[in-house]
Image 1 (cartoon, rainbow, N blue to C red):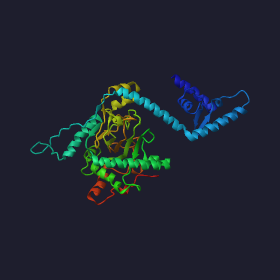
Image 2: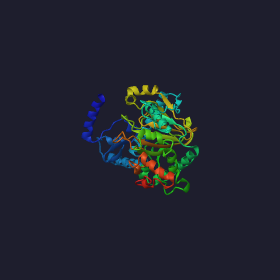
Image 3: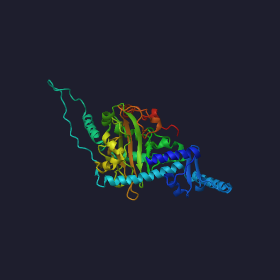
Image 4: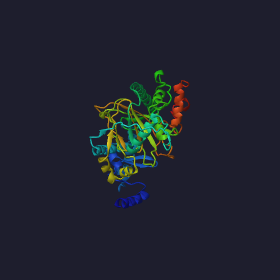
Length: 427
């Protein structure tokens, strides 16, 4: 292409001079806005700032030019060290570009998206297995038969709403605990930025949006009332009689890896996300994710939009093709997760979705309890580490959590996850 031919000639200049000035490029535009016309040149040895004239050879004496350039370089380096880094500037521009694209996608999806509702699932008839040729008896419990029908919905739509997974009082306790943990994490990371990945997941740099990584055991700052919040919550969800235990046993079996454990928190003023899958297409569903509402979620709080049925290979191909992507979004069968406190959505990580903007004036803090389990059918790297503290990676399965919760329920172990620690490695 013409661009490739130009690039080949530019390559020759870099080989000869070691540096190339490119006008009207993204990095130049960023710098022009923030550093008064200075140009940043990024190279393997670091970030260097030059005045525009320093990139030209003067036909006259170079003494004054060199001194002036040196002064500009020194001032620019002080400025960038104090206020900006090249990665910060690039990240900010990427975020602005994403926000512009997200606004376009919002128009494509339209403003009349229906609310996601829990499906009405008819009870399957129970096979008794009596008489010749009657077939094998169905010995599953009602919860297991319901989970099998819910599995069919997830296979078709990629997402399932499950109401009343956690009672309101438990949601209130967990929400207060999570927001307190966010305060403590902010203190720890402000004292030592190097440990931010111990406390925050993939959303830790987004505007008023974060994935707060949670511990299975209480930390040293936890008061007495909070010491068993996590164990009590998981007991109600994933214990022997937990509301979500049957569906996860159906989807991933007891061998399914505990892959994420966090809280997704957005505050008023958080931006809308671009439409995305959490994972690229794979033949088998690699990961099943829970978002559980810890308070009622209104439209102004930025609920998640799901594009039903987009976990398929055909839909993923469209999404990756810019010539088809906009039409795909315009024609999508979308649903808005306007959940009540204690309701949850369970989704295939391949399905397309996005978080909406939390309105600056009319919104409120939205806290979602978030965990996931990986299907044992998918082996090898998923290309996504998941929102989980590093000390828990690869250490627990659904069966392990179930065994720990049985000890907790029986009263034989008040801290059932003590053997796994707090999940922190460097903090």
